Image (cartoon, rainbow, N blue to C red; front, side, top):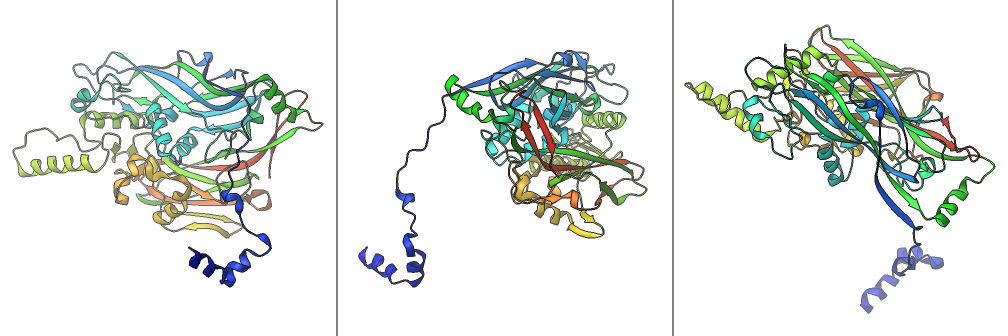
Length: 506
C-alpha cells in the first residue's frame, strides 16, 4: 500500500491535479441529504369526462382538473364498446388498431381560463411511449394501454382469448368492451421529452393554487380504432366512459405555505416547459416506388427538434378490406397453418408460415399489399431519406434509412418495442415497409428535456424551413406527411389570479 501511494506522489500529473487543495474529499464524507417536505401521495383521483359518456368516436369534451395539490402524473381510463356486424353464418376477427391507448385520441390539450397551455397529439403519445428508457415502465404502459393486442385469423383468434385478455372476440352480434389506460405526458411532468424533475416544474401543476384548469380530449374517427370486414361494418362503436385520473403530491399545510411562498412575488413566476405544433401535408403517389415530398415549416418557435412520421391516409374501406384479410389469415401468412396439404408446395407454405410466426410477431402486424394498408398504429412508413434546409442551406441530411436510424435511436429507444427487437432490418417492418416505431426525431439539442436549454434551432432567425421526406409508396394512394415541431416555451403563474400566462419563446 505504501509503495503504491508513495509512487503516485512522484507523478507530476497527479501533483498538478491536486495543487491548491483540489481534492474531492466530499466523495468520502457521509452527508445526510435534506429531507423532503411532508408529502402525502394521493393516487388515482378520478374525474369523469361526462361529455364523452356513451358518445361516438370523432367527438370532443373536457373536464375540470380536481384542485387537490401538485399534480405529478395524469392518465385517461377509457372504455370503448363495439359490436361485430353479422356476416350471416360465421364469426370473424375485427381490425382493431395497435397502440389503442393513443389510437382513439386525436389530440389532448390543457386549458386554463379557456386558453390552451399545452397540447399532445395521438402520434406524439405513441412516440413518447416507445421512447421511454425504463423498459419496465414502458411495458407497464403498453400492457395497460392495449398496445400489442393480438389479432389472428378467426380459427386461431377464437382460442387465444382468456379471462384477463383485453380480448378481441370473434363472436358477431355481441357487444364487446375494452378498457385502456393512456398516459398524458405533459412536459411539466417527469419524462424524457418532458421535465428532468417534475417536482421543480410543478408550479404550473399546482391545481390547488391555480385558476380552474381543464383537460380537453378530442377523439379520432371510429375506423381508426376498430373496423369490421368489407360489407360487415362494426356497429355501436362508442366511448362508454372516459375518466381523467391524476396522481397528486399533497404537502402538509405548513409545507404547502412554504412551497407557495414562491408565488408571493410582484411579478409572475416563470417556468420553462415545452409544447408541440403539427404541420401536416398530403400527397398522392403517381407511381409505385420512392416518393419524395416537401413540407414547409412556417412557425417561428425555438425548436428542440422535429418529429417526422408518414402514414397512408386512414380510409375506412381500406381498414375493412384489411379486416377481411385478418379474418382469413392472409394478412400475416397464417391462412395455411393447420390445414392438410396434398402437395409439396402446400406443405412448404405451412412450414414457412410457422417459421414466420416464430421470427416475428405476426399476431400484431397485418398488411394488405393490394391497398398498401397496414394495421393502424403500426402503419408508419419507413423513411429512406430526410433533408432539412433553410434558404437552400442544409441543416440536416440523411441519405438512407440506416442514417436516419443512427440519428434517431439515441433518444427514441425504439429498439425495445417488441416489433423491432429483431436482428435484421427487414424483420422490423411489414410487407408495406411499415411498423409502429417509424418516428424520426431530428434533434437540435443535446438533451431531450424541455425544461432546460441544451441547444435549439431558432426558427425566428431563419427563413422558411424546408423538410424533404422520401418513403416507399404505391400508385394512386394518398399519404400524410406529419412534422411535429417540439419547442421551448415559458409559462408564467400570475400570483394574484392564479392564472397561467403562456409566452411563446422564439
